[in-house]
Amino acid sequence: MTNIILINPPVSFKRNAWKKEIIPSTPHLGLLYIAGALEDYGFSVKIIDAADGSYSIEDIAKVIKEEHAQLIGITSMTMNIRGAVQLAKELKEKQGSIKIILGGPHLSADPTIIKRYPFFDIGITGEADITFANLAISVVEKQENISGIYSGEIPFNLDDISFPAYHLIDFEQYRKRGFWANLIMASRGCPYHCIFCSIPAISKKVRFRSPKNIINEMEKVYELTQSKYFGFVDDAFTVKKSFIFKLCDEMKNLSFKPIWDAATRVDYINHDLLRAMKEAGCSKLFFGVESGSERIRNEVIKKNVTDEQIKLATQLCWKNGIEPNHFLMLGFPTESIYDINKTVNCPSEFKPNAFNINITQPLPGSPLFELAVSEGIIEKDAIDKYIDGVYGDTYNEGWPKYIPKGVTYEYLLRAREIAYKKYYFRPRYITRRLIRDIKSISRLKYDMQNALSLIFKGKSINDYTKEI
Image (cartoon, rainbow, N blue to C red):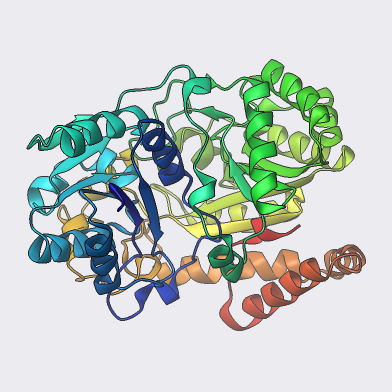
């Protein structure tokens, strides 16, 4: 018997829509954290990751019935909120007495969804580690009939939180998806307010784990997966330099030599920090450059970083043997053809190891979403239309994009294609990658797949974090 089942649904359970999306090759870290907290309270927990279509609704319903589960937790981003609603609706129709909790980023930005789609009994906004466990005590142990929205209690001492329950995971399932790295979180929170960022499921107040606590988790996860590769999922990994210096020093005590990457801001690094990170096993960093236009980046997006800072950070990474990678976007308010061309050309100016360009999709709860609605670019009921299938079967194809006035969606796609081909098909770049790829079959395979995608689809395969 299992008390509680936690579920990560696909974008949709209909028509194999998940096949058209990027399927995560790693377990859902949020569910693992909640599972760890629940086990500390003595609950038996099972995790079902259906993001890859490996479970139908009927399969999930069967597991719930066989396990005699008393509480279901469903997590959802905006991307898979349709799948979450489909699942909850079916479960309520077939097993109406079972309690269903909805959590995750989408609910935090759209808390009224459980009123519009009353298949969820309870919603938890924000961080759910503590609150989910408390609600589970009320529902499972005390048999209380509770409902409504609850604000997740913010855990301020992150060392008090249980490690993610990786022992519940069958890693063979993820190896089939291409599992390559263990996800880990050293801190929580981001103090910034970019226009495209939705109301966060994690508090903006930045909190840090102790370096020793992080090292203990890395050892535990390594024993389970035998993978020395780690990906830090912090919003701004180097926001506190003194913390990173201590963490890098603590990594010397690991029983293995880790290889890891992280995302941060270009104005949060320097030479000494990068040198310490490289010595501790950092192989690459990811920077949110967003736009090649300083005006768009700073006046519209509110990123507040200059071209010179981006150029310096990229150069410092290369000098310290760390691969710099850039995230870019096309489709912002007041963005002109001139601004778009700046983004197309900025990889050639800044010279990252790799870059990725997304067409901007305004997320519920973000200033950009509200602006798009006020401008009539996105309908007020866009969320419900997406859930109901009006926009099609997939998120990437169906969720509305922000198309600036004076350009078309097709123009943005063409600009992205030009940017990729202009940078990646340079003889110097190809030569450098081939020299590097000689040492790694996985890198060579990745680069060949990416080249074919660029040639025939005009876009990157959008998952270059898998490079090792």
